[in-house]
Image 1 (cartoon, rainbow, N blue to C red):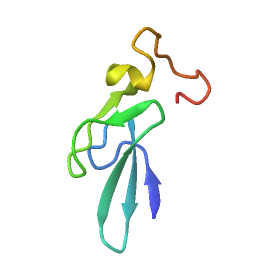
Image 2: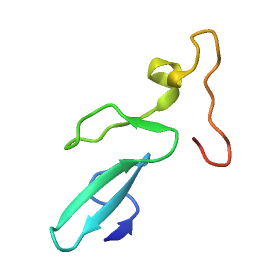
Image 3: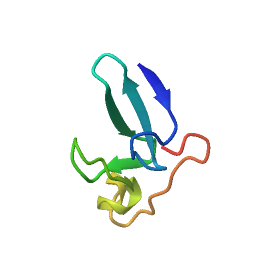
Length: 69
């Protein structure tokens, strides 16, 4: 497998991987983002906007500046 930046319509918040054997592009959300689409149509959304990122409702969700997780 090879890694590509923004190949196959994955979008800016995803990493695209191309499998030369199957000729398939796989999109995976980057750290700090979660897939709110499907396995076929990956939509990477800021994880803090989905159920407050799993944080307590009274907490403020944020991402680590170094890892964006």
